[in-house]
Length: 336
Image (tube, rainbow, N blue to C red):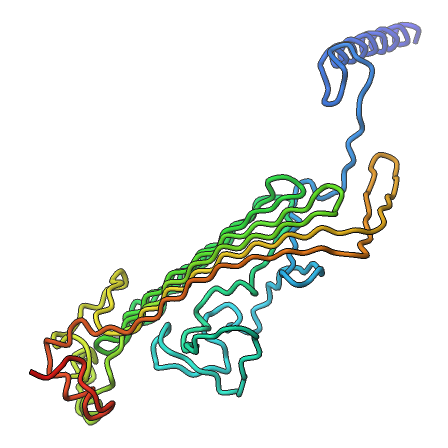
C-alpha cells in the first residue's frame, strides 16, 4: 500500500513540475497588449460574441434610422428591375410605364424623359453601410433569348467610422424580334464618414448610367405572327426600323444602330456638423461615447449631366418615308 502511495506521490510531483515549466514558458511569450516579454501588464479585450460573424446595417441619405437587409423572397420584383405594377414593350430594358398614376413630386428642373427610370441607379436610393466585415453580394440571372442580368455589391469599413461601397449592374437582352436588343450598364460609388466625436458627417455619391434600347417601330404586318412556323425565328419578321438584314442574337452585342441612348451621371457631396450635448457610458472595459445633436449646419453640392439621344444610323438602308412620314409627318433627311 505504501508502494502505491509513493508512486502516486512521484506522479503528482512530476506533473506539477511539468505544469510549472509550461507556465514559466508561457510567461516568456509576449501577449497582445503586454509591455514586453517579461512584462506583467496586460489589457483585457472586450468581446461581444460577434467576432466571427458579420454585423451590417445601412441608412439612407435623408434618414438617421439604421436598417437591416431584407432577405425574404416573397416578392421577386424587389430583386428584379421591372416592378410588378409596370408594363413594358416586351423586352427587359425597353421603355416601361406604371399602371398606377404617379405624378412627379420632385422640385427643380426636369427633362421629361422617364421611360427608363426603373433601370437607373438613383442618388436617393443610395444606402450608406456600416459593417464589421467586408461584404460582397453577387447576382446573376439568365432568361430566355440569352437575356442576362449581372449585379455586384461590395462594401467594407476602412475604419470604424469610414465606410466605402461599390455597386455595379449590367443588363443585356437581345429580345425576340429584330432590332429589339437592349444594353444597360450602371455603377455607383458611395462613401460615408463620421468623426469619432459624432459631430461631423460626410456623404459622397458618384453614379453613372448608360442606357441603350433599340427601336424597331413594330411589325410591318402583324399577320406574319400567325403564318410563322413554330420552329421559325421571330427575328426574321420584317419591322419598320433598323437594319434590313436579321441581326445576330448575341448576349455580348451592345451596339444599337436605331434606338434610344441615354447617359446620366450624378455626383453628390454633403457635409454636416452638429452642435449639441455629449455624454458617455462607462462599462468595465469599454467607454461608449454618446452625442445628442440640437443644431445642425449642412452643406450640399450636386453636379448632374444628362444626355438624351435618339439616332437612326441605318436610315439610308431603307426608305424612311415608310415610317417617319406616315406616322410622324416628317422626313429624317431633307428630300433631294
